[in-house]
Amino acid sequence: MPLYVDTSAVVKIFAAEPGADEIRKAAAEAGSLTVGWLTPLEFRSALFKKVREGILTADEVRKIIDKFSTSTTPKIQAIPFSSDILKKSIELMDKHGQAGLRSLDCLQIATAAVSGADGFLTSDVSQSEFARTAGLQVQVF
Image (cartoon, rainbow, N blue to C red; front, side):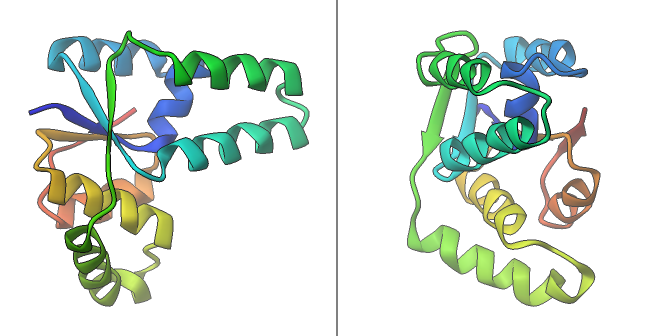
């Protein structure tokens, strides 16, 4: 089974942030990566935030988005939304919502859990703790 990659790790890969090399190495060892159905939207949001913060230009973001959209290395497959993902998301939110689990993180964790991925790669320490409680093998970069 492939590794599931949270949006925070995808941004590191394609925006050449610190930790990208380690994530690429994990991806190469796995052979393929999966992402959630919402990752393309969340990815864009994270990049446009970098434009608002003056970290990237709009032109740089467009190039990064094009690279992500046409990527074959690493090979990325999107997991479609399903009723099982919604059910798992609600279960996780009911269990961890008061502890601070955020809705998009919850959807990412639920998608990974339902997909049966071998591992969960993220750069979000808070999310990683919730992912562990869902039974996922987590790597934080």
